[in-house]
Length: 252
Ligand SMILES: NC(=O)c1ccc[n+]([C@@H]2O[C@H](COP(=O)([O-])OP(=O)(O)OC[C@H]3O[C@@H](n4cnc5c(N)ncnc54)[C@H](O)[C@@H]3O)[C@@H](O)[C@H]2O)c1
Image (cartoon, rainbow, N blue to C red; front, side, top):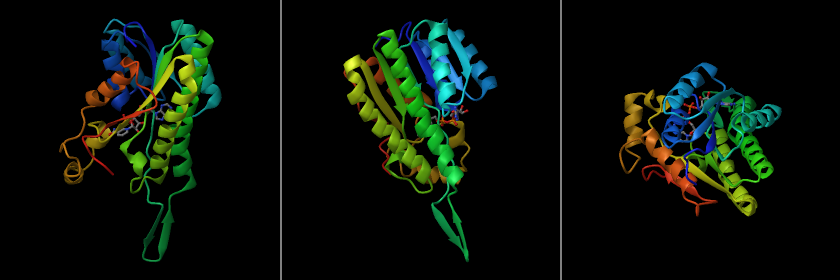
């Protein structure tokens, strides 16, 4: 798919990787529906995209709420007149060990830590993927769905909830590729390793050093390198049902 003049929805677009995806796709001439909970930061991203000469609108919505997501996609198609794809990027972490024993005290990952991460990272991707597909069918158009998974989908210490959600994202990617190809809809995933976002750069330098020693390329990804992978999935019409592991060779 050529990105020029296509309409792409980006969730979690207010910061981090989502902001880079927005700027990158705007530079390719795509018109953008930017979705996030943070309206103030979204406006800043919208202005950066609009400055590149594309149409760009912002939508404050929680991707984990069914009615809100249904209304969101109806509104986007109304505002832009069409739809070509989505980047399911919104995601959160609430890390904790499953159980921990300190002296005689046992602490557990709470049900709210579990549920909140599953709600945003798994249900959010399910709802936005489903509504994208439903709108594309209604419009009778082909399209592309890119889901952002993570290297942690293989299972990572302290991330029972996050790892389960990101493995689920991969399973949905393969399932949707099988179900939706008959409608001309391709579905792919990107599983980033550590990227230079605010969250990663805020980690203490000594911990960063330890992390870097586990990455064969000995550096974190530039957000633009993750975006390059997302763009590749959009642009390569023979790509579906697969994941790009953009992780510098790191394996968990
Ligand atoms: N940064 C990394 O190194 C890295 C590595 C692997 C995977 N990822 C994945 O990439 C994606 C982006 O990560 P990031 O580091 O840019 O995170 P980030 O926290 O900087 O950005 C995530 C955005 O999602 C938004 N968001 C959170 N909950 C939402 C909800 N319910 N509805 C709508 N928006 C919501 C936040 O407001 C935020 O703007 C996530 O799915 C993350 O799991 C990131």
